[in-house]
Length: 325
Image 1 (cartoon, rainbow, N blue to C red):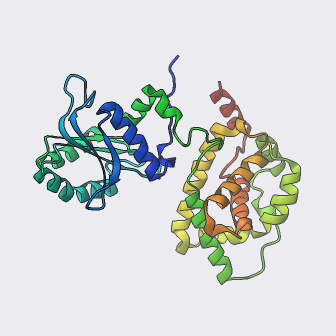
Image 2 (image 1 turned 90 degrees about the vertical axis):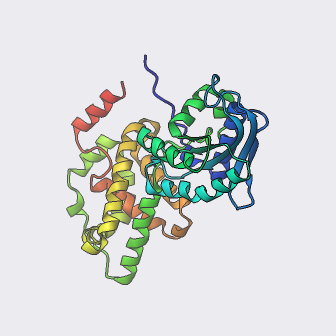
Image 3 (image 1 turned 90 degrees about the horizontal axis):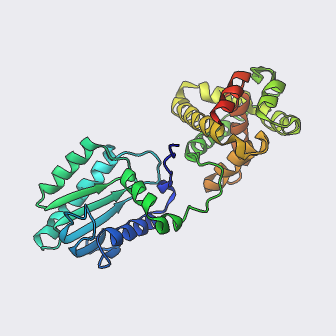
């Protein structure tokens, strides 16, 4: 049996938590003499080590001399070292590294990041760093960090997000942006709300509710009464060419949610709970939406009724059942 790789969700850590993680790895790889990340004279946060490393980059050829380590964390999942943002972050360090080299305080430079690292990108950045005068440069990306956590039980069990009990994580920022823009749209054009829901029942809604496990009470008393009267306004907002960027963010968010709901659906008793989880997560994670819960609910319910999330055919139910085995 092939085990699926663990996902440590390093993007969920705070910057300081990620620095602490990297510092503990450095103590293991380099040695107890590693000085953890602290503010430097130039405002940067460097970790330092002097001596012969324990096992990095290998036991047969460990680093010898002055080692400077830095952590470059991103809170966005799926980012890559080939992104321009990371290239800029590294180049911003060049002058600081050059100064440390001149002072005899940096022979080797190691940067930790929770971004994906490809061979071509690694080769390019290391060549640029070594041209500064370094004996060696190393980039430890998310793949190598995951390998380290796989083998360091104490470290992975102490991760701050290990006890996280949320059914799944998603980028609620996309939905929040659409909700804010829709709120402005409604405020600028306060016409009466649409009061008929029939146009939005694109498949027999009772069948859709049965397929997904949505209760009749939630549909009739919450979605139909509270949210559907606003669907026409929301659809007009998304179709307006001026709002194309928000429409794209809406569909990106819906696509992400659809996939994650398919994978984690079994963790919820009913689809009522799925929708409530999404609504509460977006609301709690975005303080600017306080007092806007109704709009968050409208957007989430629209995704469901418009068939952007949730199953809409027996075939999808059968396919999901097969994936579970």
